[in-house]
Image 1: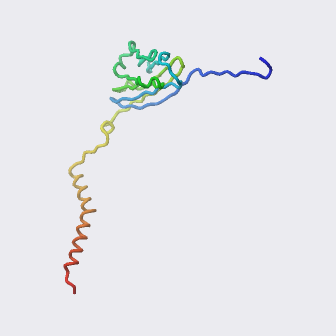
Image 2: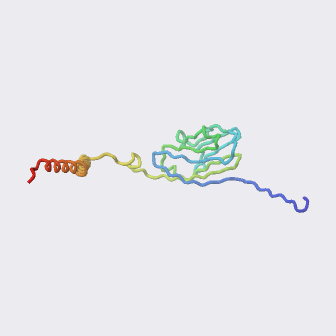
Image 3: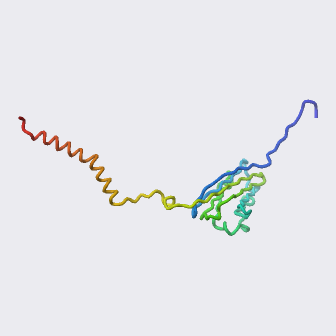
Length: 173
């Protein structure tokens, strides 16, 4: 090398991102995984999803589903978004969540050596969380709303009308 000339070389070996996701028993959750690489050629991409026990949750080989070795716990429960593959989105939707689903999941993307770790927390769901806020009113609540509405809006108008009517009908002194 000539004097005063030097070369700096560096390479990115892997990208790792850690995410925490919360889900509820019986519900579903999306475990995110995406590639930072642009211009993906699906025929060159392999994606491997593994659970906390290193069991196979889902495999994409050359951009196509490969579920022959999928762990029984995830059969018909793990879903991908094929229309998103070209955008580098290899997230998985896990449905019908159970307590045993809690833990770490790892998504490996090759040949770019990207890795995403997702921590899944499972919470007990309450009836209110499952069905939204309670909106059923009892008869006494409806009656109370009607009485308040009448007291605030209707009775003052009637009283004003009666007062004006009496004022007109009274004889001058």
